[in-house]
Length: 480
Ligand SMILES: Cc1cc2nc3c(=O)[nH]c(=O)nc-3n(C[C@H](O)[C@H](O)[C@H](O)COP(=O)(O)OP(=O)(O)OC[C@H]3O[C@@H](n4cnc5c(N)ncnc54)[C@H](O)[C@@H]3O)c2cc1C
Image (cartoon, rainbow, N blue to C red; front, top):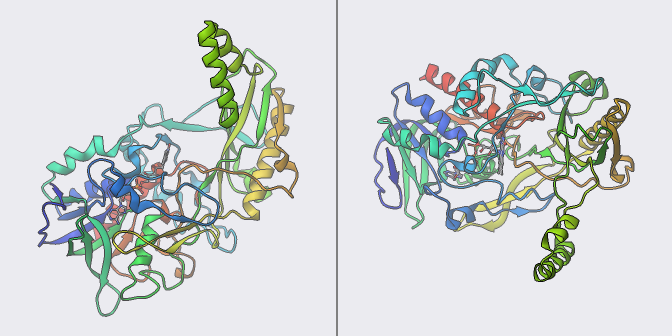
């Protein structure tokens, strides 16, 4: 059932499970756990639709490289699935490498732990199971790359697909406009007893449950845990100062441009680094896209000049001729885009800002950093791709100056994938959750979402998030 916590404020039950957040992670867990017949409290900070009032709580203090943390997630029912793009590629066995990077271990679980949940995850994301993950182009680069294989979700909007099912579920009480603001621990500080929630009129209520699962996304989950600092100053689950550390994104580096030799074949090409290349050179994985420029984009002064000529052309009734000139590009010319694995790095982190939100909670301080390992990944991948593209006779690549000159800064953008901030690790020294996604130092607090990724590979995160949620639900059902 759905309840608006701005209106219905009496909650006097003890629940078996309390799930916080209604993005893909929270909704998947609630649906899966509901099949056990146990009682579930599902909490959503925002309303059923977007509002500036709710989104304001996502404002961050950004002090490192800017990844637009306020805009790359949505704070209402369905979470960021309300504007995700739907590109899916699952992790493979090499993604679960246990090798140390920057002194930090890789995953404590293997591919076999998530593989059984692939088909169900594909159903949830409305992917074509028969078609699977197909290579996008032919095997054109022979040595270090293979064609990328992925599948496209419609994209599934979790609110549209699952809102009525959640409303109809007898054992799910879903409260929206209910922001989780604190957790209370028992005297031993080993068990979470209650969660505090607040509505937008600042009315607060505390509710008890047997198990709690945080599904707030890769920035908000550590922010929430660090803000739970009434009983433990450093925040909950943070004895080893690991909550919020190792923030990882996928790096979008404009490596340069290219011209196709064969102008009859100007299809977009997408390549993925081979495992052998990645391991021999000791770099991260990458996805490299070569896309023809369809239309010359223009910003700032160029845009103003184009607008001036367009207006003039309209008056002179030669608009189509001016449009042709303004869209002109060299035939067969394109840009190189990337989705590159970032390594876990203690200095790239989410911590608490001195600025507070309307609930008096510290806002997130977002400090995104890349390091020398990541720069090596970018440059080695770009050079190998340029050489192979040329030697395969496909065309010519012009790499950007920063790819060759190591003294230059590498410009990079984000892919809206927030990972690693409550990473999974066997040893509490190197992570926040254990191999079952349980916070190391607490016996009933779990985390779901890409914040638990130990490493992020070079595939989009939502498919693995769903697989890990299905695995967690099975574990929780078996334990209760
Ligand atoms: C523009 C864009 C395009 C994307 N495209 C892709 C893509 O093609 N492929 C892909 O795999 N991924 C993509 N992503 C990433 C994808 O959206 C995320 O991986 C996914 O939404 C993560 O799901 P989640 O449930 O972990 O977190 P979210 O979807 O962020 O959900 C978190 C939920 O927690 C709620 N919440 C937050 N704080 C509180 C609180 N204190 N109390 C209660 N509730 C709270 C939020 O309102 C929200 O509902 C894209 C993201 C963006 C922004």
